[in-house]
Each structure stands twice: as C-alpha cells, then as structure tokens.
Image 1 (cartoon, rainbow, N blue to C red):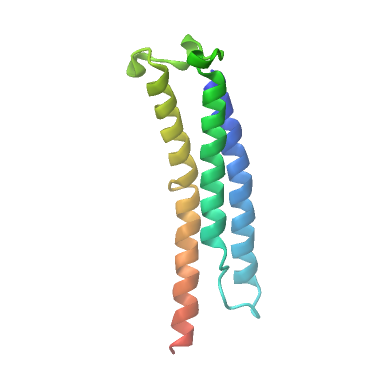
Image 2 (tube, rainbow, N blue to C red):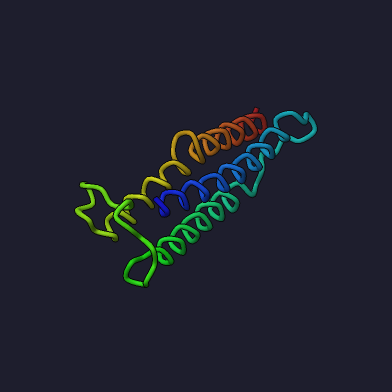
Length: 125
C-alpha cells in the first residue's frame, strides 16, 4: 500500500539518522581522550522521532480519501474495519514502535545510559 510504502521510507531515513547517533557514541568509546558521553543524544533522538512522526502524518494526510488522496482498499484490513483513521493509527503506531523500539532508539538509549554510568562512576572513584 502507499501508506506502508511511505512508512518504510520514513523508517529507512530514521535508521540512517540512528546510525549517525550510534557513530557518535562509538567515537566516544573508541577515543581514550574523550570520557564524556555525547550530550546531544536526547536532542537528536527527540528530533528524529518528531521528524518521523511529522513526515508520516503529512504522508497520511496527503493519501487520505477525505482529502481526495489515493488511500485505497489496500491500506485497510479486517482489523481496521475499513476505516482509514484506524488504518493510519495502526500504521503510525507500528512505525514509531519500529523506530523507538528494542532494535532502534531503545538500544541506543541503553548504550547512552551505560556510557553515562561509566563516566560518572569514574568521577566518583
């Protein structure tokens, strides 16, 4: 479906940004002179999620049958009861879970917490 295709493109762009965040984290870990974890993690993660949500909402709005978009039967399944709003909500929730979930930002967040614990643990030793 067109909505799911748009969601896959948004997820792909988000994954590239996550790779950039992870590279920053790795740079800190591999450079013995740098002991402070990246401070912009929260800002970068928030911007990534906000941008993904905004892009999805824009794509869903453009495809909405109520706005003359091309949202068609292929975007609905029995779980949605033929309802565009339900199909859109389910697709949005799935997308955000894939981006923010275990294999996405949650993993990077765990790495960030570990780096912060390590940094502050060394300071108090």
